Image 1: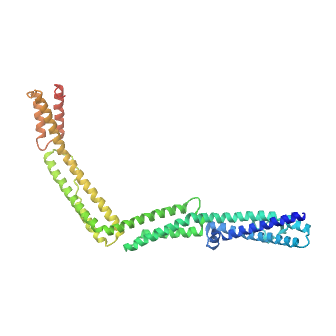
Image 2: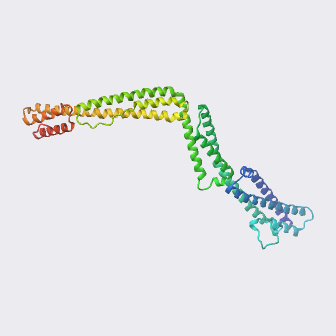
Amino acid sequence: MSIEAVDFALRRRAEERDRISDDLLDLDSHPGYRLLKGARLTGETRRRWDEAQARAVTLWWLFDAYRGVLDRAQELRAGKPDLAALTGLLAGPSVELKPENVPVEKRSLLRAAGEWITLDTVVARMDAAYRDVAETVAAADDAWSALLPRLDEADVARRSAQDQLRDLDDADPDLERIGAGIDRIRAVVTADPLGAAAPDGKIGGELNGLLADLAARRGLLEQAARIRAEYGDRARRLGERIAQVADAENEARSIRDTVLVKIASPALPVLPDEAAALRDRLAALDTAGGRWLELVEWLTGLERAVDEALARARTATESMAGLIGRRDELRGRLEAYHAKVVRLGHAEDAALSEMYGEARALLWTAPCDLRQATVAIAAYQRAISRIGVAG
């Protein structure tokens, strides 16, 4: 090499050394690298971090060797230049890798001597080692970045739920179970982020389930707080609604008695009789003794049961009242047909009069046979149509 080429190579190598030094320091100060160094790792992360640390040791050793050769070259250039020696240092195999310094994965049982490599080869090997270490650090950091913030959010939500629970002076085993699950997942994520971020998504799915359970428990706690504040009013309203159920059931029984007298062989629904049981359930709520989480289910369940019982009683009443309405509707149709016959001058028609009398007797006799009355009116209407007076 000429003196100009030596000076150019020294400047380029010095710049390269400084750039590599900055990259190594950046790697050392990377938050993910520091977390990995300080964590008690397990599983897949421990395995890959052990490999990465071995590569990092090799990386620093190679950098020290590179820097040592460059320092010797700069010392030679500062004195009387020995171009052959400088060429050997800068362009030749100037770095010795002794057997004990060669990475395990590159050793051979057949090689007893060391290996001499050029500065370019040193840089290439440093680059490969750096990429391996940085890839492991980035993968672990990505896993932590994906899961730890969600765990932090879960902890905030859990503390909020625990505060709500203390305000209620109650206990919630489900909240304790969820909290234990969150703590366990945090321990797994902290110790083995790469395992936790495995493609099967097991940890992520489990965390999603716990977060959903936590949201449900918080909603239940909020309901419990509302019930505690509103319990007196809601219990009073429930009592009033149960009274409405009792009235509706009494009305259904009254309608049933009327239908049995006026309608023959009616198909009646089963009569509801739930008011007494609902009153007992309402009285039992007072024995809960401030167990507000249980009262959420009991009170809302009772409110729903009262609404359903009231709807059943009213539906039964409407169904039975419909039979009386059907009889009245048939009476109206019969009288309308008869009025038309009279208006058109066929009042003396013996056949029509007999059919009218039979239908009227069925409809005005108690109990009324609705099926036979319907058949009789249909026959009367057809007879009217045949003589041209129905339409």
